[in-house]
Length: 457
Image 1 (cartoon, one colour):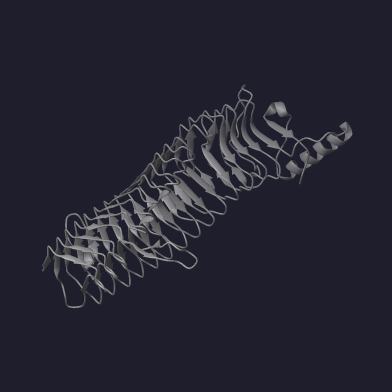
Image 2 (cartoon, helix red, strand yellow):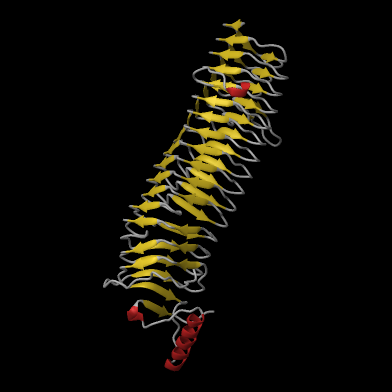
């Protein structure tokens, strides 16, 4: 047992534990070392309890090579070394994490001090903070358990997972980092029952082929998107509460994927969910309100747009109940679904009615309107159910579209050009022939469909 020591200014690790050793380190202060504060390697084991580790040149605690210690109630704070970079006269901080688990290191941190199955390293009830880099880094097939820790005020990510790392995070309080949890390069963390809040950018980032399961967490009051998925990120989010962010709740873009099911996403200043630029998420059975997006969801009470699709987004919007928004949704709003330039969604099996303006609004190159068997008559108010502009793409199928003020469906070309009456009549005949080829009868504008502008295709 090492207890009550000041261990500092060592040329190598302050404490090094290797195969066959399992010491107890209790109430020591380990600082100002030229390498790691505490190094577990080659199967080293043991218990660290109540220690303070700071200001070492490498990671405060480093766990590698199938080592399996337990860390309880330690303070692991800023690890900082400075180097003078070429061309600079003043030293700058080098990126060093408080905890680094890699090369099949296991390790465990838990508040209850109970060893997890499979003898994984455990970190419990530790205070991990004020790093000039990430708080915890997990990589190279390591699988530690982090439970009931406080991970906060780190300059970059609270828990950064890379290179196939597969940690389990349970009941941690992760806050005031730049990002809460980040997964890249085949990382597959399991993140359950944590609180991720008040980060400068976001609660969860998944990109560069990262994945993982994020279940039953509370993600709130983040500065940017609470969950950001891009660059082939493919997470599973289930049963999370995501709310109160300054911008977007869930942002999926640039080949981001993922499965998002049974979450409650609400009360963000911008959209609750934004999908754009070649993203392919599956979003189902969520409760999304005060701005929203998805399929089989209840989407209601939006002050902005209920569903916004843009920048080459190609989602499936199916079987939703979208209502009671102020501008865009699918019940009692001004505009129901807004599809921006380049979007090509499939909008199928939804109920769209009672909009004060339009049920579906598509800007340039929005969805191509196809026959819908449940299209209903328009109400008296001067509003539109489905609005499709020039160069339409996508499909609107088997929707109930009714009670719109001006008309249920408006199909619009480009801006009307000045033309002679004979030319206008010729253009209109061409339009009618084009829509007839799709099996669509185009009546006069007073009967519920408006054709405006010149034929472009």
